[in-house]
Image (cartoon, rainbow, N blue to C red):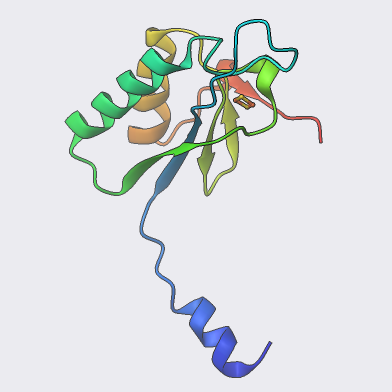
Length: 117
Ligand code: FES
C-alpha cells in the first residue's frame, strides 16, 4: 500500500461507537432457507429503530441489511465494531440489547450467537 493510500485509510474517522446491521430479508414462509422476515424480524427492528431514536444517541447507527447468511437462526443482527451477533426473539430482548449493550456497553451474553463459518 502506498503512503498516500495508507494515510487515506487512517484519515477515516470512526463515526459510531456501535453500528447495528439488521437483516430485513423476507422470504415466503415455506422457503427452505427460512428468513429473518418469516421469523418475525420486522416488529423487532421497528422497536430497535424507535428505541435508538428516542435515546438521542447519534453515535449509534442502525442499518438495514440483506441476508446475513444465518437465516434459520433469525432474526439476525450484528453489532460492529465488536462483531457481536444476536438473535433477539422478543421485544424484551430488543430492550435488553439497547439498554445493556448499545447504551451501557455490556453485551447481552444470553442472546449472542456465534456463527459457525
Ligand atoms: S434471511 Fe436473515 S440472515 Fe438470512
